Length: 191
Image 1 (cartoon, rainbow, N blue to C red):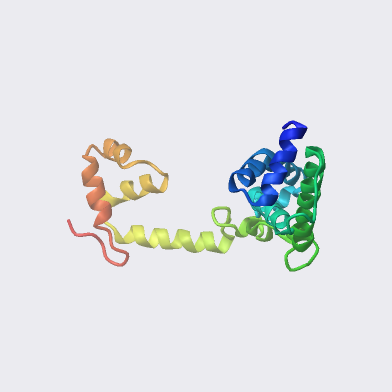
Image 2 (image 1 turned 60 degrees about the horizontal axis):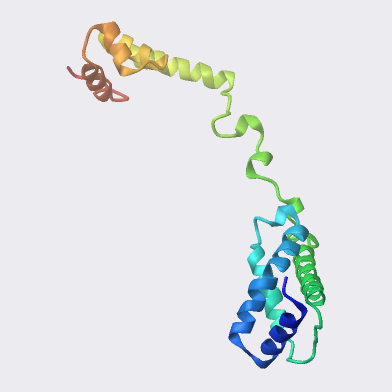
């Protein structure tokens, strides 16, 4: 905090338009504004607003006042004035965002919360008829393939790696990969 004499001199220079005095004023008293903004800003709105924007808005309002209209004898009076400006700015933003239905963040819900658990990607449980259809399709595909492809497909269905399948069959993993790559949906692979 500055001494009383330094504060009065700083305010005199600010009123005279000194850029260096304005810079010092913002540097010394800006943290007080920021503290008020962070204390007053609703937690749900912190992701939508930058505290620094409020601080700049307070300074813009402060410097918009014509020189000499507002006089501060003490630093604590200036801090109180800036803190009240900051509170008003935050309250105004909160009212805009929480006071109307259109912008009310209290009405917002994550997209996942509106989708039933079973319908969410990755969480969907197939119905009994879907499982039966898939099983029939799997059996139809297996019937169309030569016998040497059966263990490869069974292994992949169980989630085994190509190396594990190749080790079980006594072949190289590239052989397993080649056979899988050669599979087409409606025709058996050609060796």
